[in-house]
Length: 91
Picture 1: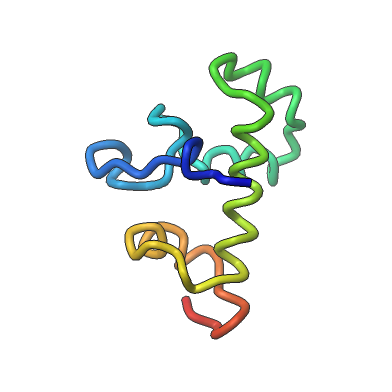
Picture 2 (picture 1 turned 30 degrees about the vertical axis):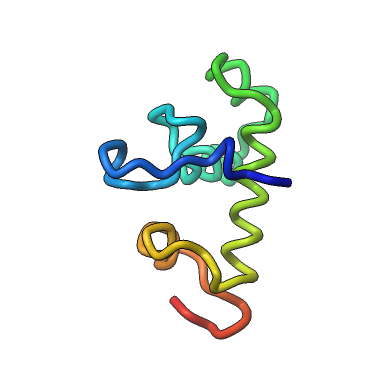
């Protein structure tokens, strides 16, 4: 999946945290909702501007971050303290 068209990073929005398609909904928000027990259908109902592909992109990004150190530095600054790279144990 090419998440680059879905996950955007803009310095002026949420301090450069990864957001969904330029909106003010962060990847971390979606992952927190899922971890808290919300279903994909419930998230889509609450946020009508989101699509199922948006949620899949968030989950995909989580896996990429966990498995790779090749993420852009500003993404590591945001996600690095929450997820650890499995390859080198970088935090």
